[in-house]
Each structure stands twice: as C-alpha cells, then as structure tokens.
Image (cartoon, rainbow, N blue to C red; front, side, top):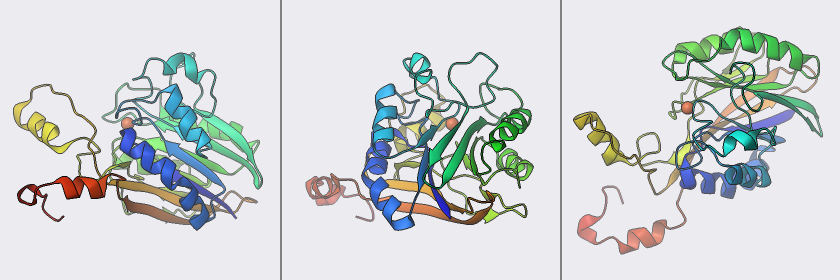
Length: 281
Ligand SMILES: [Fe+2]
C-alpha cells in the first residue's frame, strides 16, 4: 500500500511552523510515503513565496498545490517556472506560468498530483475544470493510476461533482479553499477516496485563520480593513489516504484534525493577568 498525507490550506507563519514541526511525526505515525500540502495561504494568508516553497519542500513535502491566491506574491510568477513541484490550478488558460500537474517517482511507483480550481463563487473564473481534468487525467494515467487531485473550490456541490466525475479515474479527490474541514470522508464505488474539504492548517482561535475582531467588524461595518493572521495554537487538518499502488484504488481514508499547541503558549498564558485571561484557559 502507498500512503499519501494531504494537508489543507496552510495559513501564515503559525500554519507553516506547525506543519514543518509536525511532518516527521505525522509521517512516522501514519507510515507516509508521499506528502502533498496546499500552500496558497502560506505567506501571511495570501499566496506563497519562493522561500516558503523551498522551506516546505526541504521539510519533506513532495508537492504543493494552490488555488485562487497563487499569484498574490508577485515573485512567485517567475519562480513557478523553475519549480515544477509547486502547482497552480490546471484550468488556467494556455500560456499561464507554471504547471497544474506533476508525476513523481517514489519507491512504490509513480504518483500523479493535480491542482484544479472550481468556478462557482470563485475569482478568477478559470476554464471548465471538468474538461481540463478529463484531458490531464487521461495523460497522467498513461504513466500511473495513482493520482491525487486537490479540488480548490467554494461550494460543496462543485467539489462533490468533481469527485464523482473522477470516481474510478483517480485515487483521491480532496477539497480545499473553505478552511473548514468536512466530515464526509468516504471511498466512492469506483475506488476514489473523497473528502469535500480537508480543512486548514492555521490558528484555531480565528475566522478561517484570520484574527477574529477585524473580520467581525468588517461584517458589521462593511469598511475595508486589514485582516491579520491570528496567533496561538494551530489546528492541523488534512487526510491520510491508503492506495493500492497496483490498481490506483483507494483502500482507506482517515481525516487528520489535531490541535498543535503554539511554542509560546505557556509564556503567553503566564504573562496574561488573571483578570484578562481568555475564557477556557
Ligand atoms: Fe483559496
């Protein structure tokens, strides 16, 4: 069996640090052969930089998928042409920098990874993801039937439709973008493992990884404001998928959802006057 660890949207420095610190333990505990993470919010919540890409790859990540925030850090545009393990969505128009899929060798055979972006309530509106996937998956299957797809989309319906569309053609379809993990992990009849949203790797006491008050105030006031990444303990979310490497069929899928205490947690708690201690501490 070939085991893939997939981690959902890494949010900012807290998410990056937790992922990098936890990777070797997760790898050991789940007997992981191959690691894929979504890194499109890794740079302060917006995009990913060349340095962060290199840090994640050095920590043991095999492939980084992305989505609508891929170009937020402008230096990524020339860099992505030099690093094929950083994927942008496959359904960009022809001529876009970088690639949306890759096939890599492992000790247990080749693994294909595809990044695709949905179109419902998403900006920019890219090419039809179903048509792009059909073409790309057919090409990858000439090399390997072990294929993981990151479906980066807003709506549950579009992600489930992509999963059902690819059932029997890929090993796993794992959703990202909403940062809230769903509890619908399953293996479809054709052998494709599915999870509608893997969830994020980012601050737990937050709104989708951002500090709570600015987001709440934005909804109340409708005024523009900065949305800093929150601090504190990190919720690390994703899934482990076991795949029969001979057939590409998923054998099992297990959700990952762990609270990782922030390294500065004890000092922060100790420094907080008792009258100001947050509820629950
Ligand atoms: Fe996104």
